[in-house]
Length: 292
Picture 1 (cartoon, rainbow, N blue to C red):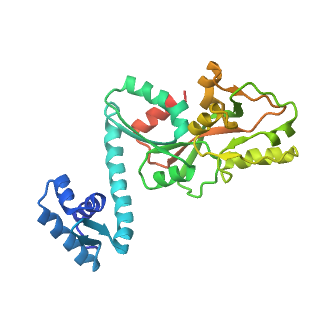
Picture 2 (cartoon, rainbow, N blue to C red; picture 1 turned 180 degrees about the horizontal axis):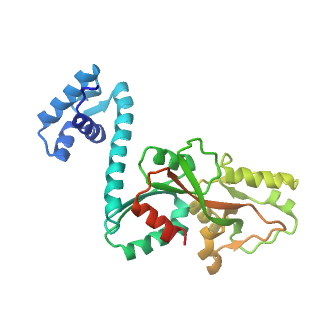
Picture 3 (cartoon, helix red, strand yellow; picture 1 turned 45 degrees about the vertical axis):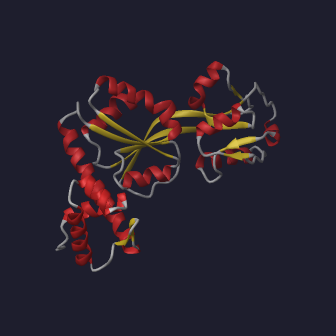
């Protein structure tokens, strides 16, 4: 059995995050000497040096960086367990931490959050945005979020992660001015604003075009929907985007849907979560707000 005091790990984590014994002592409301002594005890027990020390502060050694990853995962797991127990006992003051792609947060999620906050004003909600599905899965596996909302179709290797489709949304091309392409081949002569070529959304589009003997390449690659919208408004090109993400722009006619002779692939907003890890507050939000 390990002789390491869990309290040492908590102190180690704060020192690593603040990069200073002084700042850590202030945050922990402990004497600097107490912080330093506990780190010494931890280093002695591990028989290694975790921090480089100089007049500017401290920085992690190679062993320190490796140890930090495990300590952070452990503390996040403890926090997740504490929150799960608290939330199971009280919906009114429950806590929810959500991870989502930025564009999903903008056009889909924020309205749902506004609704539950109106019904449960004391509920604490934290929203963390990620740029890729892999980033969201990493946050989920490390218990930094309770569940995630993703629109990619990538394969998930972790068998403990459940995946549910919440909504299907059409993808479209949008332009600065009204545009109709009666022949799909005309796409080859357009300046296209696409996502990164390794994303499943882009690959699915390219494959569909290839089946129709159309070869497309991006003139500009952008990985965030908001910047695709901005680029289209500036007339840089036509952007491939989820219809719901530009609903207001289409209604206000600041952007126009490009008319094509075929239907483009759709995308799904998917719910991702770890088996058995959803709190009562999480389940309430998912059932009564996300799935309505």
